[in-house]
Image (cartoon, rainbow, N blue to C red; front, top):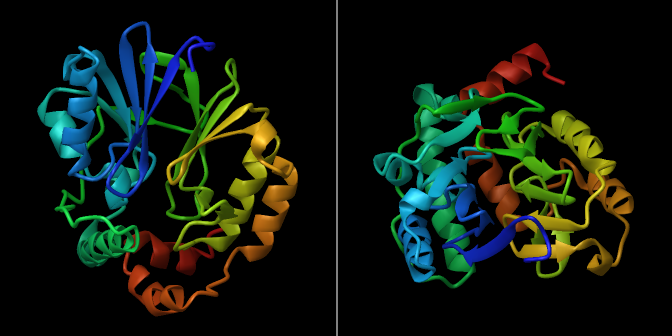
Length: 266
């Protein structure tokens, strides 16, 4: 997309779609992908005559395996990681340990549904970011990208927005699966998800980047974004697929789910 001040490179990861943003020869990676995606990113850069030294920042939107799995390898090569303080603590405690194992298994289930050849997705459940982000912050080295906190899927999800170029990276706030727009599984905090959907409803964008299924231009959506948000709000809390009903009880071990329940987090 060279008509912009940057180029968006779309890479098909093991489970999720990965985006490398190229600006003046430097690269920003939107989410670290699964642990097995590190080599895919490295080879992509090398095919373009670049190296990992040209990757200046990896931003992690939340701690699930297909978004934070590659962090260990990027940090090993000295590449800075940016995320929110809460995100890297998501899997803390005994409950977090259990949930981390469950989510790793769910990642492989997702890979099987995509008919992928199974690859390792094991990764560390905690890491400390080099840059801690708060709602409304600009990204280090890439100040035209700002974060918006959008909890619901987890308590610490974020999306990224480039107002100048009208590009919105939705991460896992909204998924595009088989030409349908759906909410992620699980939505652990329904009230917060409703507020998060409202937060992004008024964003002025030309291009949406989905962590699952790639790039979509506004003119090709077939529905207004506001109408899409209203349609999705009605589905918050639904578990209308058999596998959702089966797996949901195994998605409730994380510490923050119970803290939020006790505090009636809204």
